[in-house]
Image (cartoon, rainbow, N blue to C red):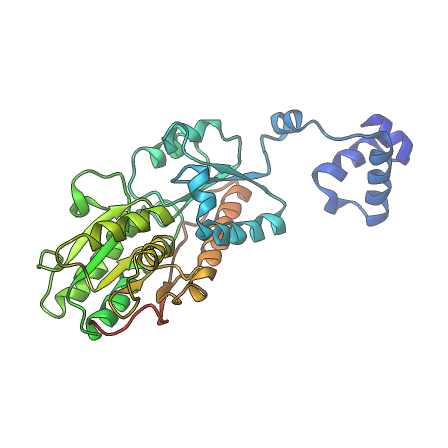
Length: 340
């Protein structure tokens, strides 16, 4: 740093400001220091800087699935775009933290970051407690409600109410509801988080016409939240003596797999089978047929979660606990029709 200061004709403290708080320097001084640094090949030691400042200027996204599954799902591309907007504006980098040896809890101590965005934590298996014990800021996205933890979620229940109401109005009475795996024992009665809220919406909609998920013709199953999971769901359901006339997938990626398998089996969608998703990923509008789905503001969720986290990191006092529930909307496309 002293060599850079000598070459640039400034103080050593000015060099420190150039790398740590450049807003305190004039543009001319900053460019002069950067030119000298480039000429000498100087760069800060990130480990030394973290020890001195006790800051990493990095956020972590704690993921519910392994990285290969996450990267397969375009949902996370949109979610990361939202987080990335905030990181770019506020000068943070982003670390992806998938489960370590199958556990989100084990991944937490290995992430040297200033805070966590926690995505898809469907129930508290100790992660919230571990983050509290570390005294590190975090924001929950699509999780359980905690009064003392900032959170961003969508109105999952209303989203499924709208799509099930629509299918019932088309005359469907044999409907399969395909949820993504939760890892919770005890069946859908023990589900929590977004999958539980979506299932509550299903029950509410069915109840309005005197039906329930226990009635003949109604099926509930869990599969992996992947395209292959949707393919598996279709094969299991279509092998039934009386297959459903409609499949309600709790995510678009599962619905894409259902459409793939239906096409391969020669099943007419929507003539013999209606299919719906949940997300409104980009591919939903160009699948064959285009997918009826529930749109949720995915990028907005990521952006807001990162903003709340940066606010919590920036203040020395306890930050305001902010909760945001975003609306959804039903988009009707070509994959749904009247019951055969």
